[in-house]
Length: 440
Image 1 (cartoon, rainbow, N blue to C red):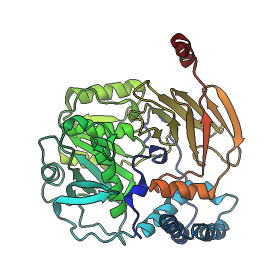
Image 2: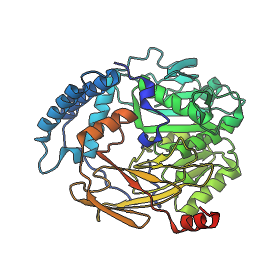
Image 3: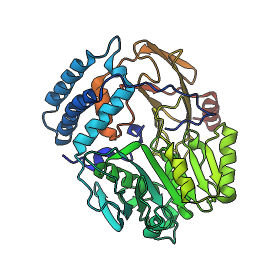
Image 4: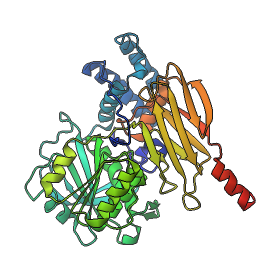
């Protein structure tokens, strides 16, 4: 059963809930898996059946009950712990489930640069130059890292891969797609209004949704890269969806005025980026994020930088300034009721698991959705959420159906959430003063 790429919903940022900057984000200890690989496979098989039932809108309750029964049996192997608290085990389960559900076909043009690759994401086209390593196997191999590449405006997609990434012969360790971009470069750095107007950011995200449905992708190792004019698009995409990527890469001189505010948890690399790349690095450093690298070098430098980069979906501190009304989520929260063009919505959020406290300061939003798992807080205990100084305390709990439904809707097995709560955002003092001055 193939997943319709539209069910990935690349523009539903509330469901596209990345890497922590060492100076900005306190390290969150990794939780080791407690179940065995065959347990992940057994549960994953029934979860895949539930995904299939949902996609076909048939026998959904029966499929969920079967999955729940398997989970209950498997839970007996875990002592003194709720199985829904095992975040990394569920990432492994969902990876198995997604692979089974998507039933990827073997790709027959491995090791060849295909400069006229075409696909669809829903009713929209995806095109560009594709390179799939010889080592790729949909059945037996590990998931591939993915690099989405935006060429310079006068660079062909083939040139972007052949000269800049593969040197014509190297069998790189990632799936590569150099995107065919909209003819009008003025819309490269915006989402646009899909489906009537596909901006550059939309083109990148549609390509991700398509490739995630067609290839066995490691969703924790997805990178967006740009060359020349394409660097602006790569950075704009990362700024709109910072929680989706493991890193952003720029090659050649970077453009002026790149949005750096949302890159605090997202590593960036600029090779021969010039003064504007240096300015972005300085601005991030002033925010407390020492996660931007600027260097002169060759292709090997890029691959060395990529090698140890992996997304962290649950950074303990998040600063997010939405750049579009279509992209209002970051990591483990999303905003509701924002109007980017009218004001400047912003949210600063953090969690402290030791005290089971989540602190959020939000401006120019009516509500905030918070997505929970046991990395953020011990969900068996009361969780304190402080939102603009207003305190909410409750036992959030864990819900298996919420976990599976969020995973199905996002198509992202690298983010596990067992509950979602919605909170009204109290007006800040500044907003109250502004409203008084405007007579509202």
